[in-house]
Image 1 (cartoon, one colour):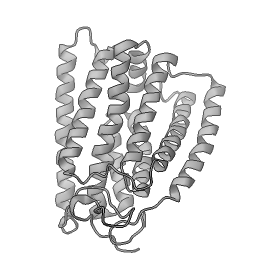
Image 2 (cartoon, rainbow, N blue to C red):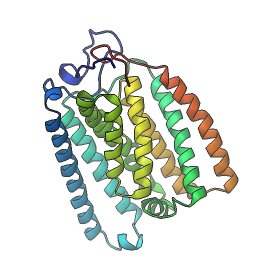
Image 3 (tube, one colour):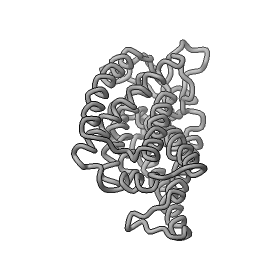
Image 4 (spheres, rainbow, N blue to C red):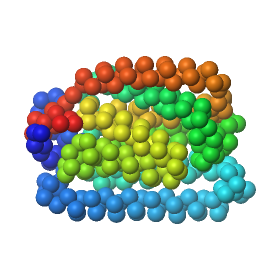
Length: 294
């Protein structure tokens, strides 16, 4: 296995370097020598971010009239407000901690982002179909979201698209794939970094079903970032997928017949396999010349 070096100063190759020679994550020249410190810092950041979100969520629930989260009666406005807190917290943490190391540019033009969006949506429809056919999606936060957004219109729906759709994609990807995966990659290499980041991403959803889905899709998003060398395709895929989900819940209830779900699963598998194959042909050379995933 070829040795991989850590990211260059600033976490990204300068514009004078050949196109595609970049890594994701902030600079940490001494990180390879003290992995325990890097992991401890990540865990501390996750704890602080989670604490902020839990406290803010509790304040919103207590202050929101008619909210009863234990019975599943979550007003759409409360759900959107909580999503706003979550997305802003993740985005702020990712940008502040990244200190310019999160890669918001792509040397491959729009193609990687488009491929990532198509692939992610296709495979997310496979997961949605499995959840609906098995009944695994009939409990937990997914059901509460369907109830809350089922009849959302006007400003409430617009804010749901902004914060649950676009905001979550931008904030979560900036933090997890942009900052956390980059830090872990510097001490563990790409594959363990992808899995560990996806696991943290799933746990932060605080729901067994949604957390499992987030873990699986997080692995895909992490792989996309490694293949493209930029967090932009992951942001685009996550944001577009979430936005479509919000709109489907609002206008169609997110449900469908048995045949529709079977068809979506088959189509999603075919399109997803095609997308993964195309994305697999995209590669960048991280600092040190090692290929992603090597």
